[in-house]
Image 1: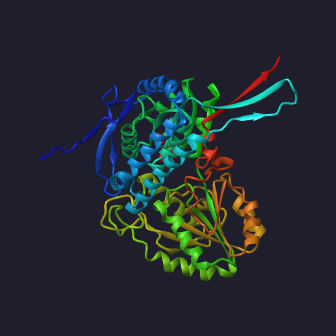
Image 2: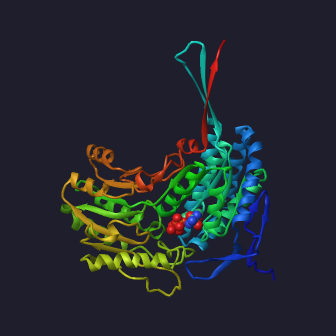
Amino acid sequence: MAEVETKVSSLFINGEWQDSDSGKTEAVVNPANLETIIEVAYGGKQETERAIEAAKAAFVEWSEMSPRKRSRILYKAHQLIYDHLDRLAEILTMEQGKPFKEARGEVKSAANFLLWYAEEANRIYGEWMPSSQTQKRILVVPQPVGVVGAITPWNFPSSMITRKIGPALAAGCTVVLKPAPETPLSAIELVKLFEQAGLPKGVLNLVTGDAEEIGQALLQNKDVRLITFTGSTEVGKYLMRESAQHVKKLSLELGGHAPVIVFEDADLDVAAKLTLASKYRNAGQTCICANRVYVHESVQEKFSQKLLEHIQSLKVGEGLDPNTDIGPLINEQAVSKVESHLNDAVKQGAEVVYGGAKWEGELNGYFFSPTIVKNVTKAMAVMNEETFGPLLPLQTFQDEAEVIAEANDTDYGLAAYIFSENLDRSLRVMEKLEYGIVGVNDVFPATAEAPFGGVKQSGVGKEGGHHGIHEFVEQKYVSIGMH
Ligand code: ADP
């Protein structure tokens, strides 16, 4: 019988798979059954420094390579992801918990970022502009930023990686990648496919292990010119502060607190279905999940009924079960946070209309029942803090100006959603919402071809679209005198 692997050499530095210097490892746990899937290397400062060195050395050749050649490698990696779609999705579900069909969707979207940036690699244009002085010429030359430190979260273990390294590699940058400790396996698989696609050694390095130490090593090294991060606002602020030391460039995708506004002229069936789809996707663990719902008081009853009709069919369970719609949360703290938001709301007078407790099933994982509460008020934590779980609060409103003010009354500014069949109103409200992304009768805005990113404390910079590559490009201005 083949031996079952219990440990994987998860550090990929200068083209070689390695263990940590100390030999320490860390368990990757399946949140649906709390079993250890495998142990990965627990790296830190030294390993990160070596990875940065490798990335710096590889930068020379990679940045000078023709974009066409870089593009081909990205395209090959995109194809390889599709070739291994089901296996990658299964690994993703095991380490992260999301239903297999969602994991498959994520892996496809991860591949699509590589396709998109394989194409964009060839379109990083410079400029030649008229000078105010006839004896001068002005040239703007795009050049890759340099070594990039990429720190990624556990909620999208695959697509958040390619959304960063796709444009970075396309632009000619080299990368040190630090995935979330909860979900390193998807990262390992992706790096292996890049290796197979022919990426030269040192261009992409992977360091798993001590987040703080790896983070510090990236921050303290002058050669890391840009930090690209997706995660909590708290860690984002820390990275921003610490980046000041060497004035690093930053691209930050941070937390959100997405409002959903259901106007009286909305198609309530569409609004109810999509609100639930947004809220319960990844068990509520996306930064653009519906976090609070404002429904016009004249349609409140009808809208609540439709939510209740549709929510009944959502099945909680293990992600690998094909009938599952809602998987487990990532860990114990995630469950406690949902519980605390729920208890706080109920204590302050909210009424539970569906669910309302940890999921009572046979499975020994971090499950929580899909829950809806109504009669919520602004004072409740759920209306101000990111819940990151399957709790949906409903509040009513009376007029447009009031609901816009409520929606904007937050430090976050990532995604907001409007449901209305009135185009004038949709455009008017969209313009007034202080958010980086607005969905009009749509709750799935993230896609390779569009610029994803927040305003206010939800982040800086864009990922996706032609915009996403500009984060990794410096514009060198050349002033030419003619004598
Ligand atoms: P969450 O609370 O959703 O886990 P975090 O912001 O803590 O979000 O995590 C997002 C990513 O940031 C993960 O890869 C995590 O390991 C990493 N991270 C957390 N703390 C630090 C830190 N001090 N320095 C660098 N990276 C960190």
